[in-house]
Length: 333
Image (cartoon, rainbow, N blue to C red; front, side):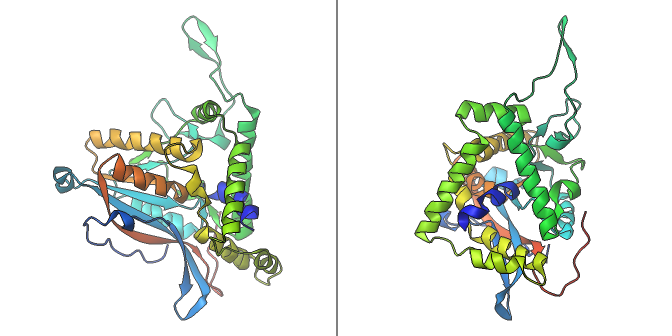
């Protein structure tokens, strides 16, 4: 069952009441979270799902001078499809940051505007280069383009099947504090090529990790029978959401994609984001948010502690999916 969901998790991972921050004091290294998605159960009916939540974890410098100056870094875990209210609450929370760094493999706008996401890319146009006119570089590997298309199709297909909304449709990327902190498609394709990676090898890595975890029985994820019942449920949309939510909340197969060796999709993109964070801090920005898929946060957390001398001080949770029965479904795009 783990293997069957791997493709969907790659495509997707790739709000209720928000509690206040805990007191900002250092936590032991062992207390730094390892899970950034959880499924909450109904407190009165402990076997009935209530919500799927994503976390926001806060780090502050161990350097007293920087800490007293008010420097904070929040890692904001994302699920790329969710309730429209989830994205609306995130938009409101983003306003408090001096700089909100976000992921998007997208073409950078040389005029400083928002980048153009993959599906909105225009056909390459000719531009001058000295005395010659040349076409801008684009990824030559058709496998890369096919991989991007497949992942986008998975996200959109899951959005419709689960009755959810798509992040790119509802997050306000034009807000003045939004800062692109990711690769362009050309950079992404080249880095994968340099590493000898492809979307096929990435899927195979996740496939093998899923098999290993299944054999070790490390997960209590959804099984084939639960999926079958969900498809034939009288409320198929809700039943499928609950099955998918359980898998999101229990899997840790993406942990293998980070670390020093890691992969382009996690390690290399995280390094780009942290370099942008360094630049924003050097410009005097103090309240930094990094809005990336929840699968990136374990690697981010380790690097903030080891490479930036920061300490974890607390976390809070945001409701991404309403899993309650008999509630009016929110409108979606």
